[in-house]
Image (cartoon, rainbow, N blue to C red; front, side):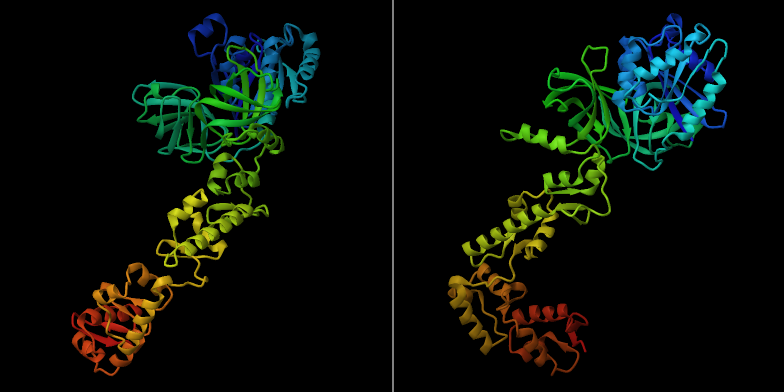
Length: 596
């Protein structure tokens, strides 16, 4: 198993020196860092632990001026090595880093007291002090020891503890969707653009297509090559440091804070509702805060919903899910203000007076994992894949208020409301126009304000209605022909006497029978409309078969016309209708036979 471990702790407490001693790799990449002995940006190293397991390290700056850089390294890492110097003990930036760990909810790691050679008698008391300061975080009871990178004291024990931490760490899924937060972007001659980041879940492979969610551009990118721990890889799984060579993308098009994603599986959002986890509440919050997630740092406008909840409107879109931990700080502040969790990545927009109070109550009742019933109820219906994008789990056994229809989840009360409304629309339409063939599908979808047109089929079925020819109607309702009733009756009487003498257009005009009247009579089963405007009784096909059965087989169109005592205008559409029913079969251009 591979893992990524980030350092944390006050400036100049020996974090980089410790990484160098453990791995033999210089984590300070910048010349200025090595000259000043001060870590400014993120550093990276890796080593093989005693068991053969591999671990990568992200070394973060400790100085308060580089808090944003520290959060970029700490955010994606699942394990923390919290460093405190034996000769100095707990200091100001130790508290800043503790607050960041608490805000992020990191609960895997260990406490390392460095420079034990300078104050060997203080190691125990510094460990006790660190545990006290870390109370309330996931590291208060973490394994702890003193080490010296200069003398080598405790380094072997530290390697064993790191090995144990990697062995017992939560194992992420290699088949989950990818969200790789970018922490570096650069160009390599002959290779092109390369980005690095900590892969927390999922798997990267060569030629994989990913979605870029960036501050400058988005769209699809392709993985040209992969490296991890200094070597080329065909694939990389979690948790790993990954260097990804991207095809067709300039280094200036992607930077720290951007993310590479499994296409179509993340909600890209600018508005989120959050719950306070640690730190200051929202009631007296500044109007704008800096939001840190992964390696991203984005300004956001704040709308408080009480002390513990708020709406954040981000300056740019980010790929977020329910439960994501956020670190919030004042713009210009060098300390963590609030730790929060994402509760909703697609919150409702306030529309009426009092919506803010209602939203506060809804957020107070919302579980951190998301509420599938509430999410669907708010919309009436929702696609399962949308919930998965949001990070809300969809169980096989649904809550009793929900039902599954294809890829949709539909709330029972919403389905009842839509069904009742649709029945009312259909009945109103029928009363207003006795000849109506029903409500057009699009009109029904618009009137019901359905989330998607495909849901109309579900509503129609629930309402006990029928659909035909793109219209919704009540087939069980007693239909009338209104003023056309007398004319249709006359036409029926005429056709009973001469079943194959279809009325001409002039005949229909005299009877004031147009297309709508004839269509209504056809729906009621009182007339049969054939091609080319031929109108007969519904009994005409059966009567025709009696006559045709007397003819020698095969027979011609002319034979049929004479046997039925009709014209070619009527005979051809009628024979084609019999063909379509499978009662007759056309053998060639001029002959048919009865299908026995």
